Length: 242
Image 1 (cartoon, rainbow, N blue to C red):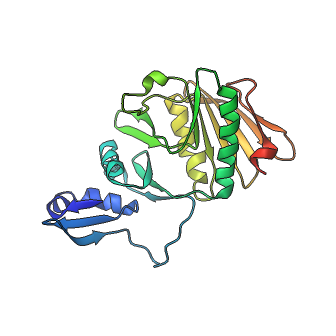
Image 2 (image 1 turned 45 degrees about the vertical axis):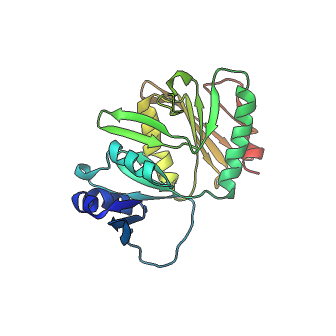
Image 3 (image 1 turned 180 degrees about the vertical axis):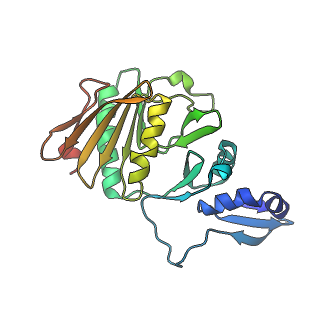
């Protein structure tokens, strides 16, 4: 992201948030690059890993939705915003992508000809927990039934019926706690947590802002993971964790 020096001087705190989220900020003056603002690291080694680097702020210094939009519109990286915290999404690994592929294939075939549509990341889902707490996430797979909530620019502003997150070592706690809380509060009806390491699937049934039921499926014990929201929708555990 390139920022004029005067803008940097007037809004240093905002750009510091962006830098802490691993966005490289190039400062310009009279059209020339003159400085760089980057996140501090204790090593010079650049490691590409599956997961996220988050910007942590205290309650009075959270990233706003408007600041998040400014960042994402100017950046080529992928980010999520949950409860005022920015997460920088890195490239996933093989087991993660294999699971997403199996899920998409199964969901696509099952929903073909039906009114709802499964989509995979990257695709922004914007959810409002409170008036001053708008979150933006990119679940690994969503099922969208309210297609009237897609605007003329192709942006989705509704609430998916079902979301799926495939866990990674560095995203496990975020997917299992803040995202479950987000989906529960914002009207998602079913949430799948797929764990390639433990070879298990947890299916949360969500209703009226609460968890109404939880189902567990594991390799070596169950042939399929099943949706409670869509009876008959099953995913082969063997294929999922092959």
